[in-house]
Amino acid sequence: MAIQSIERAAAILRALAGGSRRLGVSELSDRLGLAKGTVHGLLRALQEEGFVEQDADSGKYQLGGSLLQLGNIYLDVNELRGRSLAWADNLAIRSGEAVRVGTPHGDGVLVIHHVFRPDNTLQILEVGAHLPPHATALGKAILASSPELERYALSEELPRLTRTTITTPAALRKAMDAIRANGWAAEREEAVIGEASLAAPIFDRRGEAAGAIGVVGPVERIYDGKAPRPELVTHVRDAARAISRDLGGGRY
Image (cartoon, rainbow, N blue to C red; front, top):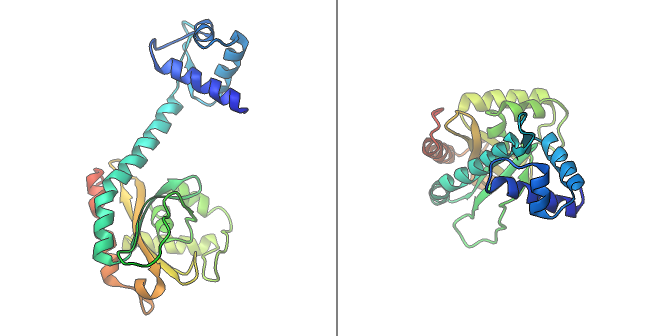
């Protein structure tokens, strides 16, 4: 769709959002200064995507349910971030490590909040980063608690990022079982050489995985020998439990 068409479609949505609940093609044409044929074509495209609906009796158009769904996703993500801020800061202080909060996005995990490790080392802000779900603790924690993402991840061979990345559905399924049993996820050099991470899922009021919170850093800081440091696991689970409680989640 051309930029001009996107701008015109947005104008139609804004017109439907203000004033009268329903508007016809002629009314929209007059308000926006567009030809009726143009308005009708754009309405048909928006209707196919569920962004507008046509009233059967009047033939006029109104906003559709897909916009409500998008709005709910926006609110959910922002609520998750808002509820996570204080707990993420607290987790960084208690653990001494960098903290990330992520949420499902497409076929991966979107980092919506990142707290630097509380020292003077050079660090890069990762907000907006898109993480592979099968190779990060954030992703695994969400995968184990999100049927939709899990179905995607188990449906095909997974990309190898390092020599220790899980790449087969069978191996990932085994890892998911362990995560659900333990209540937390870990990875060691599966996404980045020399880096490890721990995470636990965050549940919303519907009992669904809204996201996850975890720590990330050099392997020697996250792991004690072959196992993750138990105090870090405790801190991560405590943070996830607190955020879930604030979101109204009752899974913990």
